[in-house]
Length: 587
Image (cartoon, rainbow, N blue to C red; front, top):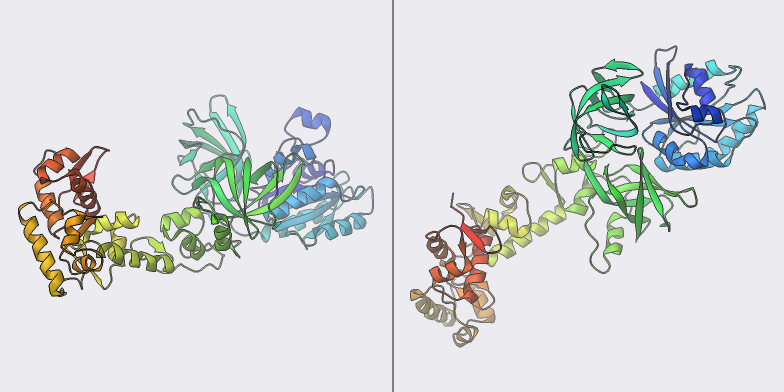
């Protein structure tokens, strides 16, 4: 099946044309038929002589119903653009074209109707001039009369050629069905309809909508019940288990775990300039109020009134409901942008987004540093590239299914060396992962390179031990060691360290040599203090408080608090609430 939406000015014969092609009445409501104009979306279908099945989404042409029009056009891959021969190009022709161009619709057919009332050549040439410079430039044109049937065979042949040239859908892709109708059927329950652009729906599938799990109870396409519907198709889905969720147009049925819903996105604006005033963001059948913050370089940050399931590289549009005007198209760049907290952050973000319209894996990794295969896929850039995008793989994962930006990975390596260098006895892989903000310990293992090494799950400097100290510093370290022999956690005061001349470069040299350990400012202990402390704390009832730890270690709170934090970082203890910790058993 191929799905084609109509577009064009009000009363230019879109519904008449669909009736002539299908023999069906696309206007569903009595009010629409009484007023002779489409108000909401209509649907009809036919089978061409070639055997190709076409489903038509008939959209309203009146300016008051542009939101309804966009709900029909948004998920459709192709358009039948209608212009009346006796009226020519009209205001809503222009607005519909602006919307289609903003959404990046490239497949279409220009149909000049009412050719029995006026010379169609004039309207055809006028329309072609307006189509120039848009995504629909150069599409084929056919002149018809829905009333007399003139040109209908030629139109069917042109639609057949249009359908044959449409890209093939990805039937294995996760489902995102934008809903355009919701109703209840007695004895069956909730039914939603939409255009399935990618993926496959099956009876029994579990999906997500409105944050709730639902199950596909039944499927219907072109008035026929079926157990399976592959894209592209118009489909009605009977749902079981929507519970408290209030379903409406603009929501989406989703494959669980395959989509990221987001309220904040970074976009590139087709207009190049950030519009002002109240805006509505349209994508699929969704129409969501949006607040725009200009970033610079033709980019902006949108904050949506409700979260939508989006992917990088998609195209939406911004509309000003007050002026009833399409403002600009918007390329979705990043669906998980970092907050803009510092002065100059917006300009820096614009520079990072510069030159990108359809993000690649490398772009997402440059913006985020580290992403899993699942993250990249859900964001719209699976490693290996989108089908047909020409986007190559981001290279091999650095560990497991984790991919990274080379510059970010190098910076992490430098940070790891710096962190380990501050701990004479090194730190566990798990502690290093926490300090670096890494989600898995195997990423730390992948980072380890000279001068670092891993021994028994502890990351250490391989060049630390055996470095001789100058006699003056060695004597001071020996004196301090003697003082700590009886009470190993009675860290010397700042004054005592100064008396021993263990400050500044002298202290740093002792730490580099592995002779002393700086736990915090003015808290200096011997290198074996953490392991000794962990051994003593294991004897306490679990969990234990800071006061209990202080007593067990026979030290002051000045030493106990930073020492416990150091043990947390080393992975020897773990905080379980604001007051208590437990010891982490060694593997």
